Image (tube, rainbow, N blue to C red; front, side, top):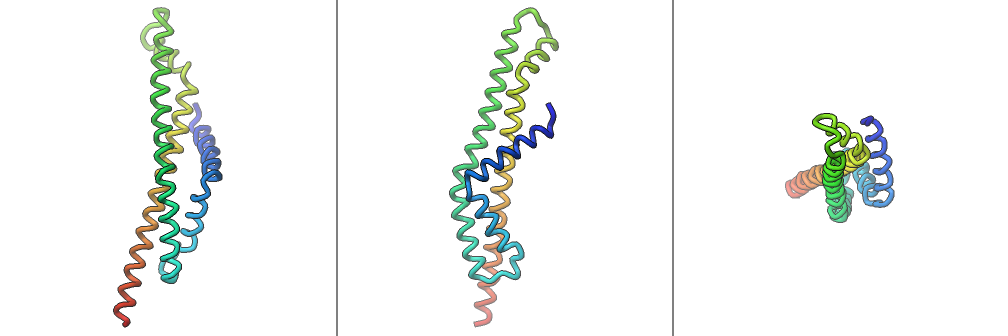
Length: 151
C-alpha cells in the first residue's frame, strides 16, 4: 500500500467534504480578513469572531462524525482480519497465516487509513480555527483596554 495514494484519496474526499459543508470556506474567508490582527479594526474583528464561532458551533457536530467513522473502519478491519484468519483454517500456520489474512484485508486497511487521515485533518483544522478565535478575542481585549485608557 502506497502512503501517497492514501493521502491523495484522503485529499479528494476532503474536497468533497469541504464542498458539502460550506462553513469551512466561510471560516477561511473570515480568517483571511483577520490574518494580520494588528491592522484590523474592532468592528471587523468582532464580526469575524462571531461568525467563525457560529460556524464552529455547526462544525462541532460534523467533526466527531468523521472520528467515529475512522474508529468504525478500524473495528471493521480488525473483525475482517480475524474472519479471514479463521477462514484460512489449518492449511496455514504462524506468520504465513498472518500474512495471508493481512493480504486479504489490505483494502479494509487502506480504507481505515484514509478515514483516519480525514478525521485527523478535520480535527486539526477545527483546532486551528479555535486558536484563531482565541487570538481574535485576545486582540479585542487589548483594543477594549486601550479604548478605556483613552477615555
